[in-house]
Image (cartoon, rainbow over all chains, first blue to last red; front, side):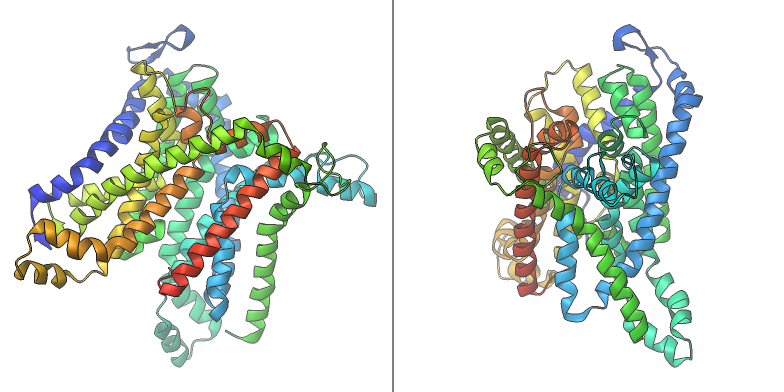
Length: 283
Length: 261
């Protein structure tokens, strides 16, 4: 690799320019807005104020923040519990491997809105599940399946499960099989080998999966929006409404900045605990 | 793996596949349902397919989506490829920070990008239209192109470039005659990824498009909000079918070339 400052930055300049202008500056600007004063009708008065943060941590929105963290966390853990054995199976399914992986890619690439809509067909009050249960006489009235935290978590799991499967799959797939053989030769049983060899070696995949599942899960607004019609809220709903309905940009900006800090922290943790070759697990 | 473990894993994975596909299968089935009111089967019909093809909103949303995806792909592919070349070839001061910067779009919540751009447009008093979604779409896709091309470059034999230069080719000739053809599959894969991400993108479009300029996902959102309807069933089925075919074609081609990830 050559040392050439000028040429490197010449090649990098178009993308750095774009990312700075349309990503870094806008996000920094959001940071500035979060500390301004909210005038009437959404005006931004450039006087320092921490009111947006006081309001974000007031009981009303603090509840939404904790709720979002909690639901996204549960959904991510459920994804992990489903994804690991599933990815393990695919990685060990020989000639079927590629076909099975393609079957995971189809839902992965199908728009989230459409996949959530599919669950609405199943779960709404006149939906397939309620109709079947009513016909069988198990219930007298339709169950409010979508309008509950359970429904929201199901939507999050269904929406982001492929994000967890793919990095874990890659890390299991890249696992050097000779380590497993060595472990068994040294007398470790399958359980011991799994816990002491496989699991630690596939940890980067788990960490990558955790980040790229948790981040969209905590910031998504369409799940609560489409399933509960805004009766249950996550941080994303509050940010959207702050910008599009209530014209309280300061609050939306403050919550976005908190999300951004969370994301940068998790990215730093990921870079700290993984090697350069693990980085591509994120993509 | 022991036979019993394998059996348990097999049954478990089968359940996961059912979890993935049962909801999708119901959408497909109901797209052929005679009833206008949702989820009770009353009989087979193709009526809804006929009516959706004449839906002018849908046609203009599709055109908008394709336009955005093409523009995004062109810009992101050029910028991302140049960045990958720089990161592959050179060491320089600030390289770590540049790499970190490129990972931010991969993990940043799309809603933060969206409202940040919306805020900037608002402050500058810009009127929103179809093109105001381009900056956001490109910003979140550059990194993917860069990373895919970089992966291709890492298996690239640098001595080939040196050989070309030893034989008297200048830098420009070396790039177009040697480097570019060899990394072209990577560039193509990156472009395809950028195209798909842009086509699928909802949140940034939702915030930064003008009021009249729907893309397909934005249109789907406004339709789904109104509840279950035959039109959405049909539209979803068509999109799912296209996705299925595309994934199958791309997958089979990669398998033939033997570089499935």
